[in-house]
Image (cartoon, rainbow, N blue to C red; front, side):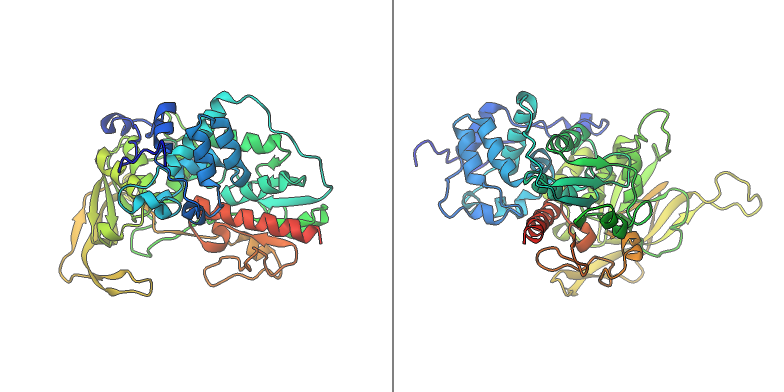
Length: 471
C-alpha cells in the first residue's frame, strides 16, 4: 500500500518529566501534534476485515477515522468516532486499548500496534479546540427516559437515546456530573475540563442533568415511572468499597481508595484550605494492584508523601493495572512491594491518656511475604503465605484499593429487582433487568470494570430501550 509508514514502533507520546509531574496535578501525557498524528495514522494498513473494530466494546469505525487523519480531515475523523462513542476525549485517555482494539491490530504481530487510543485522543482534542459549531438537537419523538447515574454507562445511554430524539433526564447523586470520571480518575490522567466538555455536548443534544438526587433515597425507581418516564436505565456504578477485614482498618489514616480519590478529585482536598481534609506528607501504603491503586498512589505522591508503597500479594506479571500506568508510577518513584500481603494495621495507643490526640492514628502495617502456588479458578497462580516471613512497614497512611461492589441502595428500595450474590443487578443480553422497562449496565451490573465496558453496556441498553418503546 502506498504511503504506509512501516516503522515497527509507534510514535512516542510526549509526557511531562517524571520529577516535575510527580508534584503537580497537570496531565501527564501531552498529546500528539498534527504532524505526529498523521505520521502515526500512516502506520494503519486499513485492513479489509478490520480486526481492531471487533476489539472495541462500542465498535468505533477505527480504520475509517484513521483514514480521515491521514487526509488531514481531523473534524471528519471526529464525526466518525462520535457516531459510535459519546465520550471520545475520555476514551482516548483512559481506555485499556492495549487489551482491546490495539490487541487486535495486525501491526502488533511483528512490532507495535497502531496507537489507536492516542489518535482518538488527538482527534477529540482537536475538535474541542477548533470546532465552534454547536451539535444539532434532534426533534423530540415524545418518549421520556430516566437515567440513574452520570458515569460512562449512563452518559453513553443518554447520548445514544438523545440522538434519536428521546427526552432524557440523568439523575446524579453527587453535585457534579461524570460519575467515576470525576470522582475516581485523577486530574493528571483525565482533566475534569475534558469530562465537563463531554457532558456539555450531551446537554446541547437535549440531555437534562439533575445533580444531588439520590435514586433510592430522594426518588425511587417506582416514582420515576409515576413521573411519566417510560423506561429507566440504572448506571449507578460500584461505589461500595471492599476492605480486608484485618485488625486496625478503623484507625484514623486508613482510607478506601474511593474515599481518598473522591476527597482529592471532587472535593479538591489538595488545596491549601480544603473543605474536606486528607493526608499530606508522611509515608503511604496503597494495598492493591489495579488502575485505582496506581491512581491513589500517584495522587498521594502529589499530595506531598515522602514515600509511597504499592503493596500487592502477587508478582509484577499478575499486576492488573495498565502497563502504562505502572510505568508512569515507577518513573515517578512509587515503590512496589510485591508478593506481600497486609495482616494488621498498627496504631498509636497511649492507655495512660485516652485524650492524647495521637491515639488511634496509623503508625505502621504488618505484612507477610507470599509465593505463587497453584492456579486459581481464573487461571492465576494463587498467592500462598510464607511461614515466618512477617515484617512491618513504617507508614502513616494506608489506602485500601482491593475493589468495590455495587451500591445496595437501589436494590433495597426497588421491589422485584433481581441481584446476584455480589450485589450486581442481574440483566439479560440487552441489559434488561427482572423489572419491565428497567435496564441496567456498567459497574452496577458487573462490579468495578473499565470505562469502555460500561460504555458498551450503556450503548446496548439504549438500543434495547429504543426497540422496546417502538414496538
